[in-house]
Amino acid sequence: MSDHGIRHALTPPPTDGKADTEADQIPQIIILFRKGVDLLEQLVEQIRDAWNHLLKEVTAFLARASQEVQNSFWARVVEWWTDEIAHLLDEIRRRLEEIRSGVDRILTTLQQAISGAVPVGSLFERATVYVTTLNRELSDISGDMSGGVNLVYWRGPARDSYDKKLQDQVNAVLNTHEKVRNTGRWLAAVGKENMTYLAELGDRVAAITGPFVAAIANASQATAGNAPQALFSLHSLSEVIGQAAAETLQYAINLAKRIASVTDQILTLQDGISNNAGLEDGKWPQVAGA
Amino acid sequence: MGDYNYYTKQSIEVATDAIREESKKWYRLSDRMERVCQTTRSLSLELAAFMVVDPVTGPIAAADLKRTYDGMHNKLTTLFQQATKELELFGDALKRAADAYERSDANSAVNLNEIWKGK
Image (cartoon, rainbow over all chains, first blue to last red; front, side, top):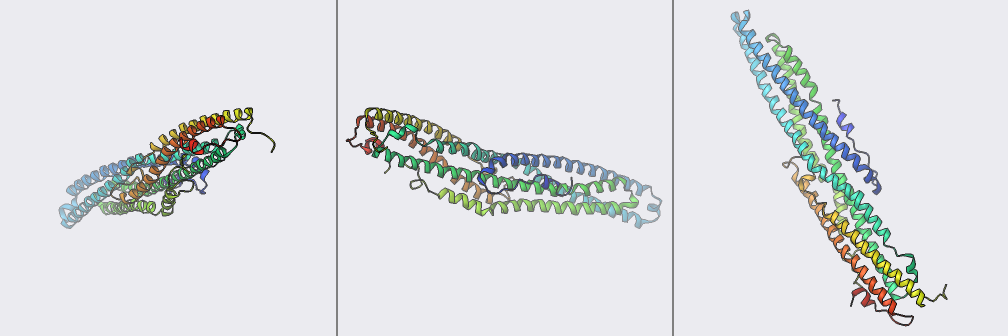
């Protein structure tokens, strides 16, 4: 997986803030979101396979190296050589444990993101209903409220009063229509932030597959004689894994911060709740009212 | 146009039919609003729906989002519930208006209180 490949593939379409774009955009975002989850599932498999492969190769190397030491002429005549190799092998075992710990943390993060994606999927479904079904129905209802042609024959104070009350009802529908559109837009924005997180996470974790391959290759070819090279390779991998594990945790914190900082959108929605234009003290205008 | 007599028997009949049709329209609108209400009511969201991250890092921001969403969701559900009732009352009021219009003539006053409040 190339650098930034996942993030690029999952880049949400740009939003121009227009109300009528969400209905088109959300289905596309849902597809990308599912694609992001699929990619994370693939990464889990790849990392798990790579880890198992590395473990197998390093274990084989350790056994091979021990055997070499026992059979070596140098081991019999030069004690420091044996000590040096033993020290290197111990260091390799320690590095392997560090890698195991980092891999565990990364796999846990990936799996949590995958499981967490299921309920977030419902957020996208809700957003879709707001910007399609409800948006359309409220638009139709306010359009259908206007009076029939033959009402022109109805004259007098009751008719004047009816026209006013009808407009009150239309205004109330317009108020809720705006609320519905804003809610759908807001939910879509929250969903996009989650998708960005999946993309960041995927990109970061995909970047560790290269060092894994190198470490596996080195371990499979290593002998006691070039144990330092195998150790160096594992040392590098351990650092890469450790950094990736720390950063994936940071991404989760970033997501929480980013979503919390979508302040203007939260405020827009909160303003929308208290926007009573077209309503009567926050309630639907009453037919029996003044 | 100013000479047209809106209070001839024929005009009143046409107007009364139109008002009764209008009444039916508001009943249909009420039915549609009820479906809008039911759809909206079904759109509740759990805390976990707002963030994919695990609960250790996510709850604070997610709780804010849920609280905001719940506020809007409740508001809309309540408004649509009220709307369903009011649109139906509109239909009722128009039926009464049609009755009153049939009874009225050019010189009789229509009792608005009776039409809108049903009293």
